[in-house]
Length: 208
Image 1 (cartoon, rainbow, N blue to C red):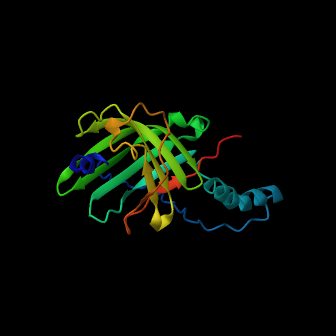
Image 2 (cartoon, rainbow, N blue to C red):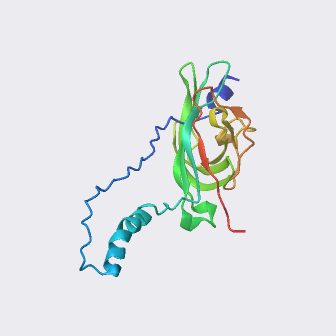
Image 3 (cartoon, rainbow, N blue to C red):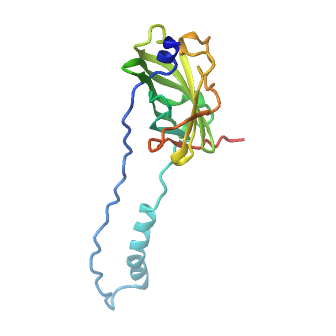
């Protein structure tokens, strides 16, 4: 039982930062009064310049096809320290192929100073509404036999009440699971610890 508690969940907390786009405001220059020699066409061109500039600055940014980001701890009545972090993305040009997703996710489970962690390279990401399923191969872990194993995680983005599930829920450890296909996980049965849930899911819009 002690071994199962020790290895049921892996990983390390990942500090994620979101880039903040700052908008530059152009200073307005005084408009010179049109002279009698100005043609109506010249006056119209001058008056339309601010409008054209605003149109260019208002162009919408291209959104990625899907994403799963954020960090949270899972609730355990015994006080286990379980953390999941995600930085997974699917580019717009790869919209038709979720297996081209990129990024990483990390997870850990510690209790009374004992436990393990793992880092995972993303190889698939599918989202629908506020639910995301991400998978990847473990690239670094202090749990013997874990490296090279594919794992999957499911996240339900519910604001302050996010939920989470993982592919090894029925096996007790990623090491004990057989070869897992991409983008496969369990239902999000776990509850996020109050005050720690900040998972964000960008919904996938496949061309049907």
